[in-house]
Length: 178
Image 1 (tube, rainbow, N blue to C red):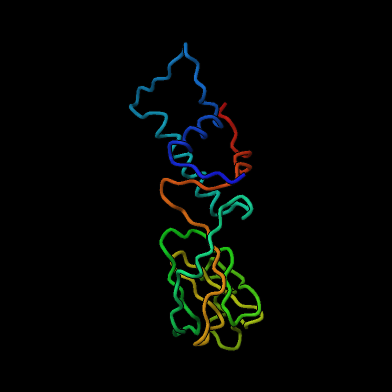
Image 2: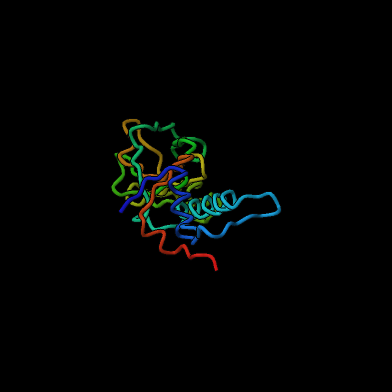
């Protein structure tokens, strides 16, 4: 089941999964170094959630199609079309232009061999096997779009501050302390 939680709701759920809730009524936890447990749990929770967004199977995440809200920038010197992405995008799942036969292979390292091959016209991807290079803020699409092209599909994982969207099955890997 897909969960949509606010930061306080997520912290409550995190406490339960880390065996901090319910606390015993006859015991109190006090730290002498001035750092409260909630701030430590929030830091741990945020690290876990970002890792989940970046590496988890897509079935455990909320995926949004933002194709209607982005614009294509004409081909640049590298021979590709550029899409500037909103700053809350952390992962690109699927991308397809209207003239392409299939969705693109998404590459996350601009220095990878697949990404470097796109810079040369003889080794560049085709409409039957397109490539999208995601650098964290923009998406370079190969082959370059035609004048009448539009993004037919652009499915992404977003990181909205203070909101947590994931399938509850993802919590199965969170082990209690101890």
